[in-house]
Amino acid sequence: MHAERLRTIAARTLAAFSDAGITSSFEALIATVRRRLSNPADPAIDTEVSTRVKELLTAIEGLEVANFPPTWRKLMSELRLDILFPESLREMVEIAFSNRRVDSDLLTTLEAVNHGVGESLEQLQLLLRGLEAVGISEDVVPRGEIEFDVAMPRESIDDNLSGINKEFNNLNRQLLVLAEICKQAPPPLRVNSISTNDFTVALNINIDLGEIIAFVLVALTSMRLGYQSKFDALKQDAFKDLPREIFDQMKAWANGYVKEEISKIVDRLPDACPESVSTEKLEAQKGPVRAALEYIEEKQEAGFNMEVRVGDPPTGGDGQDEGRAAELAQINARLIEIAKNVAQLKVLERQTTPILSLTDQTGDHVDS
Image (cartoon, rainbow, N blue to C red; front, side, top):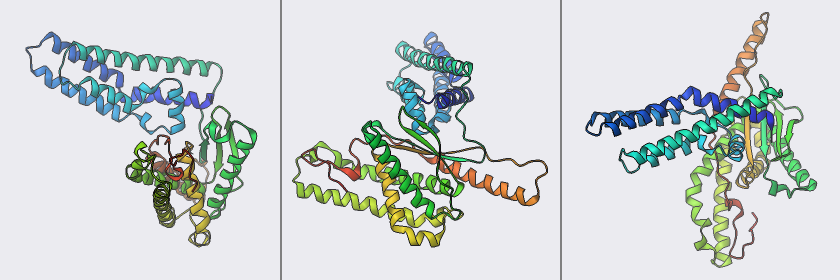
């Protein structure tokens, strides 16, 4: 497990719950419910209960944890901290009020949820203190730098060296394709770190490649959310006994739809990333770029987690000239835009049957 990243997650989660005032909002709601149970004849307290619920849900909605990347959330799940996910917390509160009655069962449920949250935060606090005590620093991208992290599920590499080598070579090949369309050619991809627990590789990339990858990840995520409901039927058991020829037609339809949408994303690249993408280079590389995006989409569906991490904007010295100051201002503005794109990424649950690799009635995968 990545100790530096674990420390960062602990610190950021604790800060998020403190900033949002989750504990105080929970305690205020519980205190109001207790007063309602002690004064059943006072209907005015019902209004106060409703207000307290809205305040708590608003606080939950504002938790920064909602924007944590998939690799962070995976670590939290491994530590059994799912209760701290905003969607989990919100669901528990809404279920508690589902019968629309303020009674002792409601109070017991709210107290149990609040206790669970408090216990999890206490565990994180102890973890943070322990990591600090042994000198583990936070996992922070240096100022002005951009990092591309890829976490590979163990089954994708068959737990052997040849499997790891194959995936790393494929990743390198596709990233080099995207690097070819950058206005500013990036230097050779540098490995910042490798975590062997989940085979996460962190690559240092330049600002052009970072902007392109961040846009691509957001666009592919939006595409996935758009087509997911349309293709859900393709993954239902009701289709498992279809004749092979019908299944192949459905497969071709789904595959064609995805390829068409990816082509549209490629066409949007110059307008979406005008400072990063060379239109001339893209025109000469459209086929390979489409293939690179198809690779990324296929890997995401297979359970790979990909994220772009952006360091704080760089700062110049006191004696910097106007040219350097203008350059830094431009870099800062671009880093901020990349960070905004990163923040749009939604957490994608791993699909048991990827759209680009459907399974026929025999249980065999039909390759693209």
